[in-house]
Length: 323
Image (cartoon, rainbow, N blue to C red; front, side, top):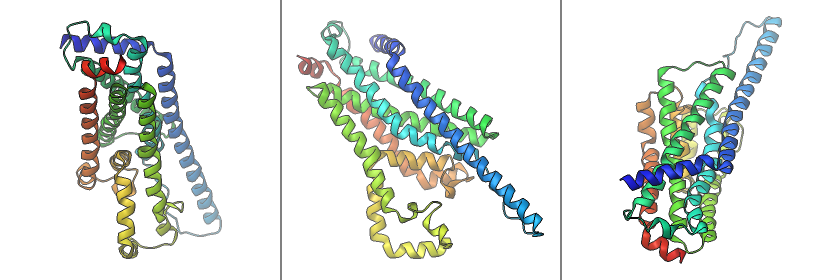
């Protein structure tokens, strides 16, 4: 246990001194904050348009008052979650890959294993450092976006909103740690470091970008701003009746989407934060009932990646691969 803590401490110090990683983290932080600012600004424009329309109605003597647009603070985090699932995953791969790459490039593995450390101590120490680093990073990101929503969006948070933020942050932590663990395991098990990086990037492209995009493109309701059915003024019951005629197509589309762990992460966090209208202002129990499978899939994938990293980052595999 002592060797695990020593390795973790050493890795955290290396991460703190790595200016490139700090710069990338700062870039992700700025990106998620800007996305909140843009979303809040867009709502402000929508509110100004509503007020102008209301003034025009009153000037015309019309007493009918349309419903005012409502600001739900957590919905402003949509862009932030999307940046985390795309840029965050890519950054996580770089961090996990770098944990092993630096040891192989500096030829320090033999020196490390000349010490009396356990079989899985190196892997456990590096994963512990990654877990702590991502815990700090995710906490900073979510505190920053929450503060931005409060300041720019002039919003206040209820206790339930804070619970939703904590749950989303914990899920984001597991998602990012999963990618780091996967990259660490690939770097340990492949003979060439370039091969590990290529495999990790191909997986990132397929899981994060290609497969979810195919599923979204196959959904006709995503092809029109605000939704196809809403633009056609089709009621919810009628919408279900229409979709019932395309069950086979929708099964294939949904199957493609759920094959991506990124889509599970997105569906769960979007539901918890109320970004999806059907879960907006719903109790957490109702959200869990509708998305528990996405949450379970997300955490199982994270545990699988951690297990893969631990089993591959061993003395036998690393020394054999690096010789």
